[in-house]
Image 1 (cartoon, rainbow, N blue to C red):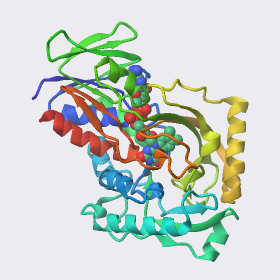
Image 2 (image 1 turned 135 degrees about the vertical axis):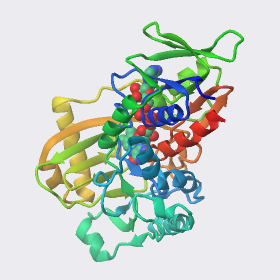
Image 3 (image 1 turned 90 degrees about the vertical axis):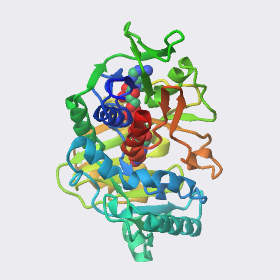
Length: 400
Ligand SMILES: Cc1cc2nc3c(=O)[nH]c(=O)nc-3n(C[C@H](O)[C@H](O)[C@H](O)COP(=O)(O)OP(=O)(O)OC[C@H]3O[C@@H](n4cnc5c(N)ncnc54)[C@H](O)[C@@H]3O)c2cc1C
């Protein structure tokens, strides 16, 4: 296998992890991205929840939990193999709190039943002890009325504490980008937008073409372009399977002057928001209806304008106001910001509908993965949390 030339399209968490895995198996890898640095798109700007499945409390079939669990449990290990260090000190330190909103698409009793079943899945998994914290005794503990009252606003009607953690995605992005650049056997082709992947005549090779005249031949091509993936699949003769939805979500990343004790919490289940406290001073805040600034079902979603200046300030104010109603204390943290960044990213999902509809396909995430046409592979990353693990599996498959 050694010496075969592979093009990896996209230098997000999927493309970066895959390129390093392939190079370590002896392939000569060229990574192509339109940005000037690897890991500068969605994989840098998200909340970094390393899913055990609880976020998908509206999927009582547990198909989503089963799909996200194996890769989530091995996230730390598969990432450590790549960056050569562990994520200690760059993850949320306490259990995540799921707060059930009174307009949740599933009732507290249903959430409790699904969470108990997910905890059981986690406990029984052979890798439960290899998660960011030991999850071999995972439980969803219901908050007492007093705990709930101390923490949440009136719109919250129940709460659960689960052993999920999130990683600081900006820290991971910096480490992974540096590791990718230092990896022998990986060439970076940055600043090139891929426009086509075509069969090279009758031969079992592929030509990758860019918007700047770039044109090179490869034995294997892996498309990990996320939002930009489907149009390139079409050029390679791989027809996308509907339904799908692209969304663009904005969120707020804040560094405070002082340390704060705000809990990491998700308001569930539906179009609400969340808070991540990575280390007492670095925080993530989102409120879904305010942050959803573009949505579409075309092959690709155009990049929306990310607000700056007064627009960014107004956005932070809206997120603050919405979150403060359900999680009093958020406002105090946001007001103490030393640095505030409004950024966002794309979400691709194999479903349609709105999050306030219990029947929406967006409440499930159990169909992402790899499609293949000969030596052309297309990867729907699905989740940040499973990307390094999926990349390891795919590299093994490509190596045969
Ligand atoms: C607000 C938000 C919160 C999220 N929270 C979580 C979470 O908590 N946990 C979780 O598991 N997942 C989460 N996700 C989803 C997660 O971020 C993505 O699944 C993941 O980052 C996708 O990784 P990727 O490498 O496929 O894509 P990207 O990081 O977007 O990488 C794709 C790369 O392809 C490049 N590209 C695209 N088109 C072209 C082209 N034509 N030519 C050249 N380059 C191109 C882009 O520049 C980019 O660098 C969240 C997403 C958002 C937006």
